[in-house]
Length: 451
Image (cartoon, rainbow, N blue to C red; front, top):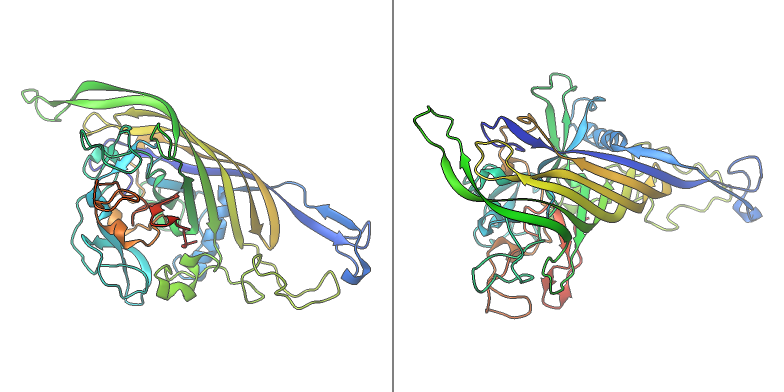
């Protein structure tokens, strides 16, 4: 996963975070001693922590703790581990064929969501309440969802419709699928692994991404863009002897800058449905249990759950250094070139850099924090990526962007609000990494329930 087969180069997409946290450090009756005295003494001295830093290394440590506690890892990730967007696509012009959407997540014998997908051409009865699933094990239409393969994803240009297919040429609308892909931790320093064969673990279900949509007469749906495309005739070299010519075809190339409003959340606690064993019957639980609060219920979201103790230093809980839950909001700016990664590829791919300047809040190590900072995805071309090189997408994929609507398992023929007239695109399909809000259904936008 994450590279085209037999390619000389592939697109690597490491994810970095540079966040500043500021929370409360002391509520005290003393001007010199932190957290001294009694609540009934009406404390008059308050101090914040000052700026603390959080990077991707801290996030990897939090995930590592959960996975080792659950036996998924035998030991913690090494200092060489990095977050990576695998099979990532960040442009609003990225689109998927309807057939790729006709799939459903499968469940293991315990009813846990295990990252395996099977064919589901129509919604089927479920053995997990509220989730349409299939027990099909057939190989799906392509092992990869990356653009250069040209099998199940493609570049779409604005078609003058929000959801409907263009009535003249049948083109699909834009702006319903980015960001696309899966979030992995790649660790070449793990015991028994190497740079050429790193440990790769899908950790997508620790994250949640949502993009805001809006419908005006420019019909871009979720993004704005400064971009230019050109049609060029290119020759794909055959790689054979000199007497064999390559094939020539007309291909879309371009460059641009897309911008869209993104909400990004991280949660390694049982407040995350995918990490909560109580969610087995809803179909979200992955078999991996998140951090369980020492006080017995979800920290940070249950008001007045603690027994009242008059002493400010109550001692009711214990330290939880790997407990983290936060949400960021801001604008993604993605500057890209639509170019060939290799001269043997069928189609070009978007390659560029995405910057995400965001503000937010969190509950980190038992303290409520305000957060400012940035995240960056710097795509680069490198020798064939060794992260999940031989793993088909349907063997390790989590679709947090699916809202559970079984209608998204089939190619829809209903326009939004008008039944049975014009074919429409799909959105928030079972493979979607990102939930696009609002998703038009009868009665208006739905509230995404899965995180």
